[in-house]
Length: 357
Image (cartoon, rainbow, N blue to C red; front, side, top):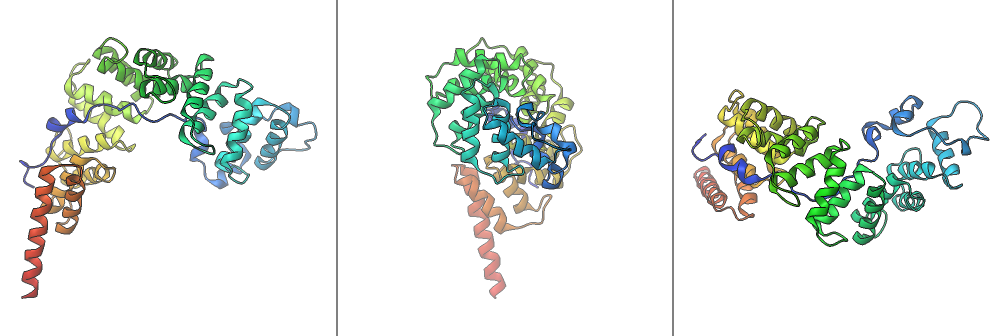
């Protein structure tokens, strides 16, 4: 490959920035997301997903309960006003656990529990409102429910209300208050809160700029497998931002983040593999990581993967595919990618003319 053309981490990582504060966290179901349908039908998994069935609904129960039985009794308890049952039956409806998936009904049960001041239900109902899941979008009401739960100490809600304040979703923008709520969540060891508060500290948004504390909070979240924090802490280590420069540690955190799907980390780790930075030079793996990032819309990765395809570095040479990836980057305003696209199209036309002779 013509390495003078490849876009490197040293040139571009600093431009990619840290985690952007957008989107809301929904950390409500935990292990249930990872079970297959067959596993969920085994009673042994039930305690890992839901608490015990409230006694109010067990008066008519006989013998051991199957998963489906427990869901049935959740509904009975929910309809008698039990807040835990309302919350958990809402989960069953939302994810289709032994009942037909029904987002509208799920939201109805979340609201029943939320209006009885259950903080997790308040947060979950707020998330549904903000994301238009099972109900029309209403950012004002979403922020209201996030705040109610946040005031009860729910870390997920504290983080989400902080995001409402940062982004002006349903409330006026207030960076000082948003940083305050992020810190509340962070100090409960909530990884999303640690990530967001670290971002505020790094950028000096809503709080005084403090790169040392920012790196500390990023690491706390990164070591809980928060992929965006892994990228941000890797960046701190790579450039010596708030911590002593440590390229080996930086690349390790980039890899952790990349393997969880962070496009910026995939690009940067691909650059490390391309250049042999800390890790052995490996053009095949570099191309794989560039493609992962490129397919998520990362413009520099689209350019680099296009170059890999054009030169046959780590992948079979393919001018048609190279042109496609260059075109993706060019459509984002990248002039160099446009030149790559024009070059590939011209070469491909020349090859086709020669084939016809």
